[in-house]
Length: 275
Image (cartoon, rainbow, N blue to C red; front, side, top):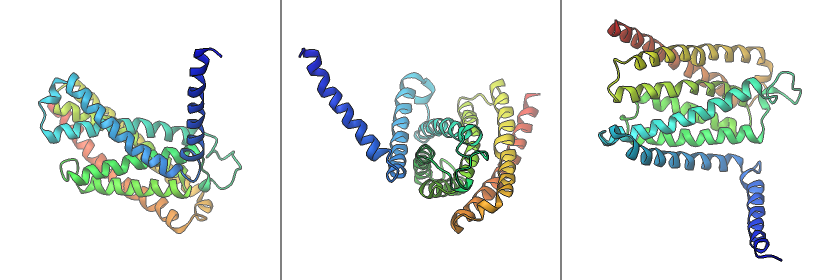
């Protein structure tokens, strides 16, 4: 037996053990909710530290910010990456996956779930816990009461769907609205960089307007219409799940309409200044 082969055998053995560990524990159905939430929390911490490290060396303006501004800079970076992740996952499950298709006859649509969908929601729960903790810890520097209410409602609904497997389709529909988060965060970065009168700031406002209209207004109407069409299946859910399907999206939709009104006012104000 050659030396290289002898070296490969222990490596192969460790690899097999790692695969067994991941398959039997991390991705085993009973452990998925817990491993995914923990993974989400640890990932948020890792991304936060990486953004802090990279920004310190590659963005001169970062070092000139106040301590709370640097924290918000890092936190918005985590928020942006989570938004890309969960909006892409949600779009896949809602519009392309066979799991929630009406043509799929595998049980009621309100009770369908998979290991992947549950794991994806768990990672998002980890993010909401992390971000809500930051908002409460530094209150009100990172957001007021409306942010706490938004994150608490979202976190509870996503956690319930993850733990019970109920209503995951509607959870993903609501989470598609995270697609507007990167634009909101970019607006803050432009503001902090002193670019409120730039064309980039104006374009960002227009993108936010149309993105918000589609993802946080029209999409919610589509969700309520879908619930109406599948009302008999929704009624089969546990009373808690049934309440969350109606109460949480309705509450978020109300907040979205209020914020949309503020977005319209802000865009009109920006256009007036630019002319």
